[in-house]
Length: 144
Image (cartoon, rainbow, N blue to C red; front, side, top):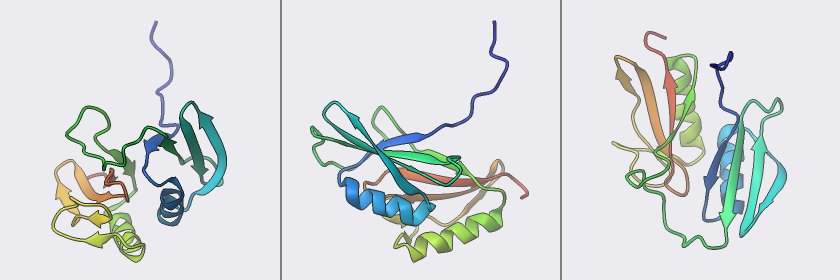
C-alpha cells in the first residue's frame, strides 16, 4: 500500500566544526533562533528554528570530528536546497548574504562565498557556502 501523503522536509542536520560560531552564523543568515540542545552519544546538537518551526536546522558537534571542511564530492550530503518564490527573492537573499559576510565571487568554492545567480531552464539558483564549506542553495521556479 502506498502512503497517501507526500512527505515534506522536517529539518536538516549538519555536522560543524565550531558549533557556537555556526549557531551564530545560521541565526544571522536564516533568522532562526536556538531552541534546545539535542544531546547524542559523542557530542551535542543544537536545534535552531523559526517561530513557526517551519524551518528547523540542527547543528551537530561530534567529539571525534577532525576539523576538516566539507566536500560534496565525498559520499554523503551534496548540498541543501531551499525554495523561494521568485528570482527577485534570490536577489534579496544575495544582498542579505553579502551583508552577513558571504562574499560574491565567480563560484562558491570556499567557505562564506556565493555564486552569481544562475538562470537555467529548470529555474534560477543561488549557491553559497557556510563557515564549514557546506554547500547551500536558494532556488526559484522558472519564469518566477
